Image 1 (tube, helix red, strand yellow):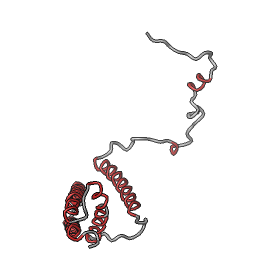
Image 2: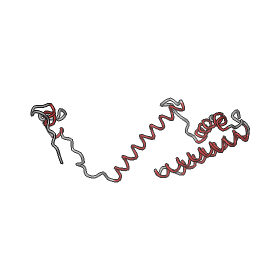
Image 3: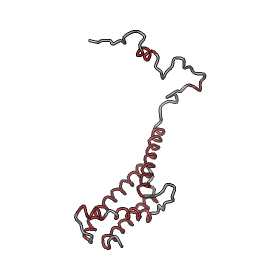
Amino acid sequence: MVNTINPVGGNSEVTRLISRPPLLPTELKTSGPDDIVDFGSSGKVSPGQAQGIVLERAYEQLRAVVGDARADLGIPEGVELDTSPDATANRIADFAIGFFSKYAKNNGLEDNEEGRAQFAKFIGGAIETGIGEARDILGALSALSPQIDNNINQTASVIKQRLDDFVKNGIDA
């Protein structure tokens, strides 16, 4: 059973709004071809255009992540940053090693070679996973050139050396 619900009286506000929505006035007229918006007249989106749209959105998100990371690390916008493998590795290692005291406290570890080794194994594994994911992403984007791959390898090597030094000598080394 269908019941039609009509507004009470023929001149109600509801009837007026239905017959002439306020956002689309009936007296709206175009003055020329420049006033017309035409969607989809250029045909279907090509695979190249679709990939371009996806990449641009990915770059926007990446720029946002980089901006957030800069802010979190206290690096002002516009400051030149040394992106050499050594400098990158040292920033990563410094950041990671900075968490040792909290990790040790939360896991009941002492600041000795054994405790530092356990931390280095944990944090080193996380760093290796991150490096592998970055390498996979660059490969999927066809951006993993031999030079970039070599820089990643150098960065990973310096991080490993810094963690090994930390295990043997502690934070003050």
